[in-house]
Image (cartoon, rainbow, N blue to C red; front, side, top):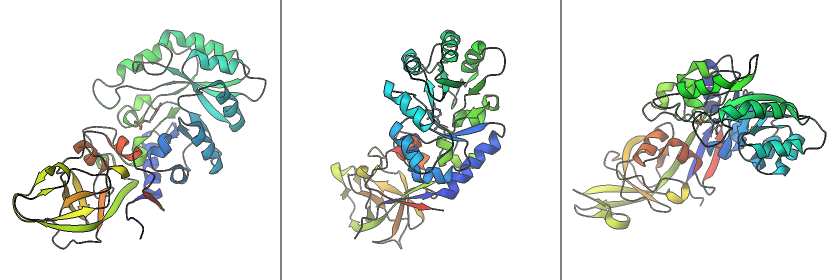
Length: 356
Ligand SMILES: *Cc1c(COP(=O)(O)O)cnc(C)c1O
């Protein structure tokens, strides 16, 4: 029989979350961010869930080509731009917009033979100190781009380092606005956290990622409080049951010790499926719809759960690791990470089911 470990992907939830972005930023066009295979949800689900988006943004050229194969005809933006000279030709052939964050990428555009122009997002570094031109170099970069026949319209872009917590975006926004040329220029600023908290960053384009998938960009605010719906459920089944006596231990290293006789369920899901190995005893999990907890160490293909709160549960029953019953952000917090990482880490061996 097939191993019961699977993810269910809800197109309705993706659409709902996109409509939440529309409601929050009604005057902006939306780049739905689909990097990392749509945060682990798969591009096939993303193109269906985000049909109403104005464009899709990602970092992988091969996945951008895949979007075209899947029938996506609207704009596509490469968020890290070209990695090598050949990428700019590829972008032009397929009509991809390119981020330009460093001088070499402008050289590649300058070397392009005549042809249709490429849309460019000029990236400014406003404090993340990862990608982007320093603010005082942006005018010169924009001037260079404006002189190139290979370049079409230029949108000014930055990415906030601290939109999800204090001190916020004020400093980055000041730096950005201080160097904008006079007159109308198109801009793109906001990630999910800024979409929720900083309406002043809702300019021509917004770039939501995590919120589209129904998880929170904030450490201290659950996704449900933002009216977002989880699009991914990681589920499996109980494949065994053990009865422990007081003093018995569970799993590698005996990390959990039973204080009293108890029933333990064994779930067909482990770190090789993308469940975090760092999730300790007590991480929430739902068995047959009832919330309980994990016990002991997560192993490669299995993990153990406490069946005491679910006396009726037995082998074959459904287990939800995260999804509509167990927020992914809660699991992530127990494991010392964020929902983003868990979504992206779901392993290829886990079966995918797309639901409307
Ligand atoms: C990933 C990414 C986003 C989306 O960020 P979220 O926090 O997931 O909303 C936006 N812009 C850029 C440049 C990104 O790389």
